[in-house]
Length: 307
Image 1 (cartoon, one colour):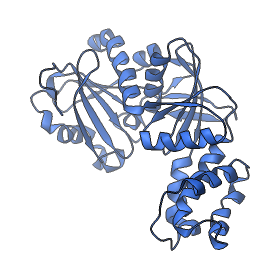
Image 2 (image 1 turned 90 degrees about the horizontal axis):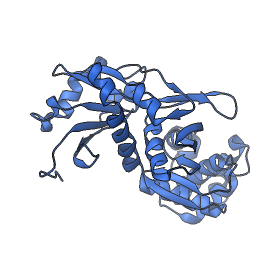
Image 3 (image 1 turned 180 degrees about the vertical axis):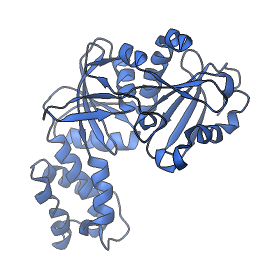
Image 4 (image 1 turned 60 degrees about the horizontal axis):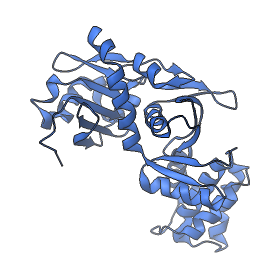
């Protein structure tokens, strides 16, 4: 609900591959109003980001035209509004504030896109993120000087290490995308009845996934149903557990794990992590994103005014 008594100062945008979200913000980072649409990068026709942004924010007409706009996420990718170079690890909030790239908004002034982050993961392979680095900077501000290990569940789950208010290491796991592809296009998801969430099947899958050899363990999704070890209505719960278990098998810490993201998905990870003996604390992905972007907004004022 719009908070009409608050004064809007800027607009925060999280524009990803599948979804668009915009937040009308006060100077101090309080949300006045929110817009959301299933209009991610893939839905933007022929690179018409400026006109699409106008259409998506039309309910704020008369307000949006005069406000600074800061964007994060895949909008800064090669397929986005503008390809913004990644900031190299270690990444601090100050570096992100200095790595903004401008775009032309439909009413003539500039909008600004935050850089993603890149670095080699522990397998010495290049890794990238866009949008999650802002959430992690928001988490870092909440943790203060504490060192923290965080998991950001999602289509491409991220495991990240925060040290001295900076993102120092991270690794990507295609857990969410694999789940979607396997249930839709593989033999594992064929001819299934309506699915029910089942905690026992999920944790059984977690145990299986922890064993490694993922391509072999995945076949057990079929055989567990075939021999009626799990109900055919619990196959997706078991598959989810296998994939999350395989991801969590890579964790090398016994410290508290911070989960950042959408609450129901974080709770699923919390259940799996508790099952393997790790304590967790959940943080809202939106709150961390807006906290991080608010700091970037404040720190980048001089640079944006000069540009």
